[in-house]
Image (cartoon, rainbow, N blue to C red; front, side, top):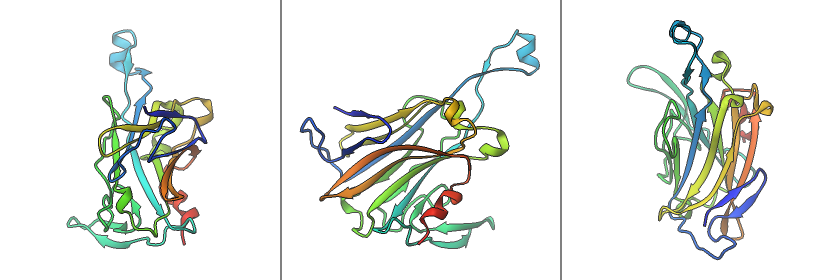
Length: 225
């Protein structure tokens, strides 16, 4: 049975306290969120006496692969797309929307949901934990609201945000949920959780630390080798 975590709680991903074993050959880290509905203030809202509208939020999932020193050893390279766009951190140890798959093929981001609409995961990062190179000691999972500062969007406006781990057989191992409140006002990104090696297994820790920046590069500065 999956465990619902609280902030700061750590569990073993391979075997829970009930003795159930999980297949870590491929683990899906799923992230989801709902945007709190707001009263419409536009012409139609006034015409029909108010109403609810959903604002589009684009939350991006990012993963930092850290070495034993807690640093991102490979920052990748700078390249250009066919359209001439310059991309940094390409094919390095940071998985994000411009570099969605690690060169090893053992961790990748499946895609981008720009609204959080619908049930289930809105974004997924899949990790082949059993195949991951031993030099990677920890994976940090970040969520950032794209252009959150510009659009005045923050986690205080986000309901039912969660991160969960699902094993290769589709069994949910653990889930960490939080809903926006006043403590998250003005916070546009979140260090949500981490997975790390310990005693031949993998641990999952719920973190839930918010940051005012909407740019994950500001967080990445703390992990540069």
